[in-house]
Image (cartoon, rainbow, N blue to C red; front, side):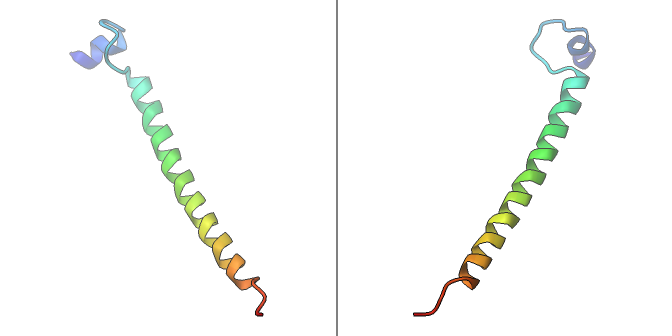
Length: 55
């Protein structure tokens, strides 16, 4: 009943089904981007260590 009310925009407090799907998609994409960013940071650190010239 509450979801039906949200979908009909009654009360304006709850997320509609479409908004819930969109939010889930954004969260999934955010997790993916955070993982990719972490991998790139690790790769950059690895290659930075490899390029250090010995003194």
